[in-house]
Length: 273
Ligand code: NAD
Image (cartoon, rainbow, N blue to C red):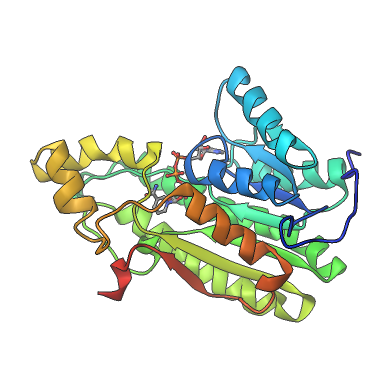
């Protein structure tokens, strides 16, 4: 069992000292930003996602240099057994899970009449069902210890829709419903469950959908960025993975104890409209 080496009291600059965190989909983008922020905050971090071994080794040693320990678990979260296995492997290794971040997600952009059925199934499996499977596996230990933090990276699309994203919008609305339900079920046991709802953040996931959106709407890449992505975002700026990491650290810290069952928008004002 790789128990965290020091069980020191959380301080203002290391608010997660001695905690064990799983961050799904943390080999890239927002999840990586959150994993880095958790490691800098003093947590031991379980990194998950798809990447080659050299990149995995690099990310683990980077996070380890910031925190207590960083390990990689390559669970494919489309598979319910591997999703709950990510939690049970962490329990075997560290003895507990203090923080669970459900972040792994994929997107597909297409009119609903042409939306491929396998893409619908994959988006629901990863963006919604995996969140259920990991929470189901992690919650009993959190409740037994009287403390836990569950953070689901949802989206502005958990609150509002956009055309051509039927599976993603359905999954993210589902994630927010799940978040509220878990928040209610676990509130008395010191466990919180919240959804972070980013607007557009410049990551590989966004980059990949630009061409599909251009095709679906018959416009150029530049027009997609200006008139589709940032059209919704009144700040006219992409949110950053560092901003999302800082919010996740706050939610996971002792200071986040009374924030529960809610959606926190990081979208430059998008859903205020
Ligand atoms: P990304 O593509 O950069 O990262 C996705 C991560 O998920 C990667 O680590 C990838 O390896 C992992 N992953 C993919 N399939 C997996 C699988 N089967 N099992 C385990 N891991 C898998 O994407 P991102 O933009 O950082 O998005 C992260 C989350 O944030 C997603 O849930 C996404 O819906 C949400 N989000 C992103 C934005 C944005 O603008 N980027 C906005 C709102 C919400």
